[in-house]
Image 1: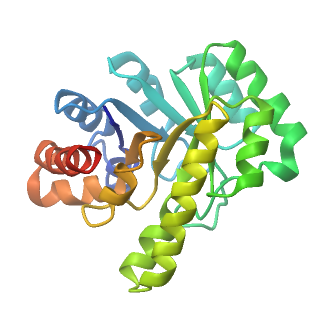
Image 2: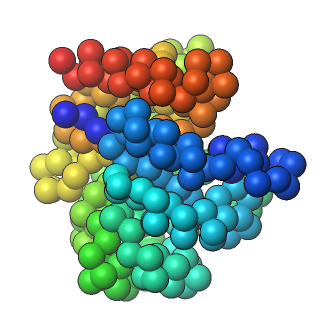
Length: 244
């Protein structure tokens, strides 16, 4: 079955807007778990703009489903990951000035550095995922450095859809389709995520090589109107229908 990972970063964004103790992202994670999430994703950024160190501590203690710890390739984040040993770590690019992750990680140019960076994480028992664009050289490099998983960046595909640039959307979907097949042929587990909504999820969910979707911002936004569990249930329905 296609798995659904729920990213709870933006519950923390709302909390931090007032500097209060609520809404609690750990409570949101537990609600998502009870509603059938297969995993929880949290991105601890260098500037701590949403998730905080204490949230990671609490998530590790509270969750029964796997935690996917998103992190930049820095010594600080490596040390935090090695202390907690989450089920999975996803290495993502990070810039302080960006609103959200703008693209995939540049693996090919940093292959040697990243190979050494992820080795201790693998040795500690973490599944290592690399967040990358649908680009063959990047996938090949991720495979060479020892990543077990790639997560294909679906942001461009989603942006083209909402901008009405349908020819470019379809071309990006074709690239995602081709690269999911290619990554699977190398023995990599394929995940996908970024920007997925009810309107855009089904073509990605229909890709047979994709084993997990990680969705956050849209589900947290939709939960304002529906509640988190109903928002997730509709996403799961669309995913399952597409896969069927």
